[in-house]
Image (tube, rainbow, N blue to C red):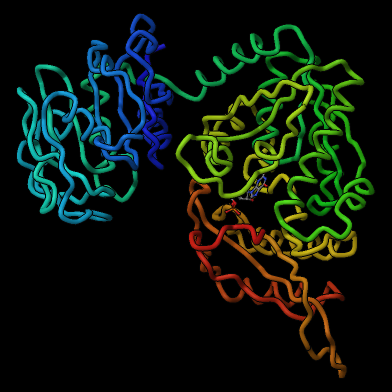
Length: 507
Ligand code: XMP
């Protein structure tokens, strides 16, 4: 398969580069920064290499390792940010610490609208995030653009088919970033005929090889990720897949009925495990968020292991997607933000081999795969729901009573968004139950009850999010219904914080 490889120098947007190239119809994957030319698979459809951005300076002792022969792989190379500096440094140019950093939207002057800047002229807005700058270019290289701070904001060596941009073409803030990547794809002469159908095809092949005649179990949560992973695996290994839905007592309202309706006749061995007592027992007296996550994660795995033993499965399939992995600190350079149970919370001595077929996809790519696998619309368009479920939406200790309040409030929020015809706009709409009480007046009596937080957010990739500016009438309908229908609640507040600085969930 024709492909463009992105080498990971630790930049926050490294995977986004690969995703953008896939959007342009060329398969792209991310490999470690020190992958050498011989391992890139030049015989095997390699059409180009991108060196990603990263936080280091080319002069740092601990800068990410690289294999200089990637520049000799015989295909066009594009350096982005750190990659741009590294290429200049390796080929005899000069990189220096800038007098000041250059961060955010920046005006760039195009000096030569050709190569990767073909079709550009005059000025254009680009997104910068760096301090070091290239001050002298290697032989045969030409400046294509500059900014006030970066004399060499883009360069090219037509002879060597090597290009560099100091800015980030992959982020949407760069006005014509996709055009830059498209120009690179053209320079690579890559055929632009890759689609999610090809992903499905190769994922099915990969799963067959991975599972290799054994049996596998998957935890189905009802979310789009695990449902899609299950549908893929079921296509690959049919009845050798056992899909386990665990009713933890921390699921959405009427979720178990929904799951039964949706998965009973999809050609896999589908099992519902009622385990709420076990979860509430294990969570008794525990208030610390990360401990709750770990307890829930470990219990899930215990149950999967029990079911695996029953059917003789050796592989545990998980619907982990790229954003889960980055937030759990799977790349060498990213900070661990929280341990998502489906990656960070697995036990060390686990008997099952973990397989994550969706590991490199973004959420909307997963939805596209789900659509092609003909999963029901309700699953495809569903809001995201975290693995630990209501366990991380009930602040402090989790009890069955609190779970019930939080679940019903969440259901009202989703229902009112659907009624207003705006459900599909949001990443998630959910309720958070606070571990405190406030005074209210209901009927003629003074009350002292729980407040519920309504959180409705918009996000494209889970890394950043904005609270949504939902019409007041919808918020009012949500608030009235929650206080009317849920006896234990007398106050509803709306969370108006973006991510960052907050996270989407409250724990
Ligand atoms: P945060 O709160 O980190 O959430 O901004 C980003 C996305 O991840 C989901 N999330 C989780 N998913 N296990 C999961 O499977 C977890 O522990 C977990 N914590 C957060 C969250 O719902 C949001 O969609």
